[in-house]
Image 1 (cartoon, one colour):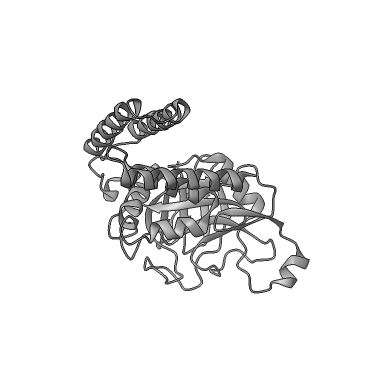
Image 2 (image 1 turned 90 degrees about the horizontal axis):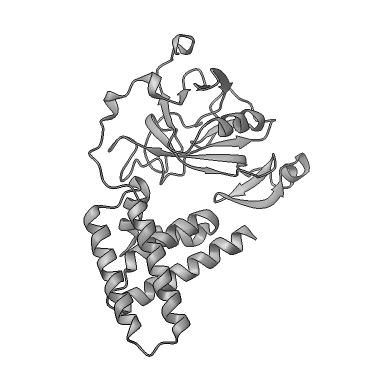
Length: 295
């Protein structure tokens, strides 16, 4: 049911974007941003198509990576929507169409002004380890949750440590949790493209698909915060779909075996998931950390 809801929203926003491309005053890009946001929740194929669109893809990727909207763009879109709303009042369109269209534009304008604006980026070097909500020691294969002062074994990328796209390696440096996915999903729920398939992992299901890379229970989707290191073209953690996610209990922890993500056993992952919020800071270190000294 949730998938149908998100896909319906995607279709509505794309139709409005097409109208915006034809009708003066209607913003196209804003509706495409909304379509990309909705597709990321429940339509991975459309999400990929939008992000790789030759004309609008780069704009959508930039918005997704930074989550900010310049004030100038907010004013421009708002003025265009206001003009369109006034014009709509004097058209022969049915009253319900006028009300619905203007209501949609009002909601979009409110949403747009609630988006954060571009701020001067704080250099990652100014952060210290105690700023992190989660520390991941890739040498010792340990995740440290600051709030609970708890350590968990993990499994990082089998191909080693690295930022490069399509490398299968686990990135380094400062990140944040861009999205938390799977809030109410039962333990061992199977995810594909960040959408629950309705399957529950079991040994029999594993035997049927022995080569499947299982993403289970919860997803913490990471976004890099260091331009040129883990943020931006060719090295972008978010675009590489690097997660902290659940894995079958039979998969060994403490050894790098993943395709680049951070794997955790499900009970441990659920503890971490419930303890942190979106935008929580995550630091991945190649150097062994003395976690016992952290406060």
